[in-house]
Length: 444
Image (tube, rainbow, N blue to C red; front, side, top):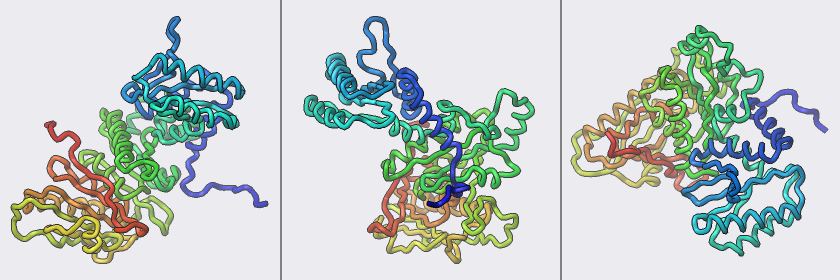
């Protein structure tokens, strides 16, 4: 048998493991009321519209331990010291029937939340199937403590720490009661909020700290790990929009700076930049595959900042039309590939570098030039194609560049922008993912 590993692979997140172990410990040792409190603390952070219910006087809790009122979704929580089949069956029978009696037509879904330390008895899934036949208009579901952890894992690090605490050994990521005013002021002046955008691959906190030096993390890292696949693209985008806006709101009084480390899908990277916008101070970092580091090279002498623009109209087009913009940095995007995904349109623009390559990005200066160049293209399209109704955006390049591109998109100045995600396994290779547009078109 092989010996235990003596070190963890790059990207291992010790804070998440600490939270997982502490969560499992709580589930194993907690009382019934403590598990219900744990459930409430997680679900109300995942979906703030959750309504907590407590027993009240002689009416009790109406067989409801919490609900989503607008969805008619009732939760019943159960965490016994020992799971016994007869008691569990009676619990489901009584709680479900009484909930149906009280909530009547308002109840559309009932979820049984349970903390089974060694799994459910085999008769319970069949019992739930029987109940579905008895109540055909209801959606009956169950949520285990393991599934509840997956919900907790998807919360921001700040939210998880509110529930499960800040692990020892990472005090440098948090302000404590012993911090002096001078310490806090120095951290504000020399610190930044760290966004870890890691839906595909975990990002090492140690590597992040090394890349930031001499700048320091301000507060806990903000984990954004929405994952298309389990989630629709639109829900993944909404998840990260709420995470960013929450971080911006909490840090508004200290003029926040953000450092972004991303190993996520390109469409979500562009969307992240779109949400951050160019009104915030944002530093994007890029993972160097050869050096295995996020730290920018000390010298910028070999960084090529040449980006050409081809295809802009030479005269003003007054008719309504759509436009295609291709950005070829790490690999060329052919016109045929874009047309296969988005159709043929009268305006087809390409931004490209002399030799597209996955190692093109070597300097923050290249990101600055990329942002300026793309902003110029958007301005030219507004001037030359004033009735452009939609822009189809195709991007092949590093994640840092994608975030920078997203920051340049002002939804009130530009038409809706369609984002595409590339995969060799799909036909066409570029598949539509998201639309970037003004969410409040009537506001001023």
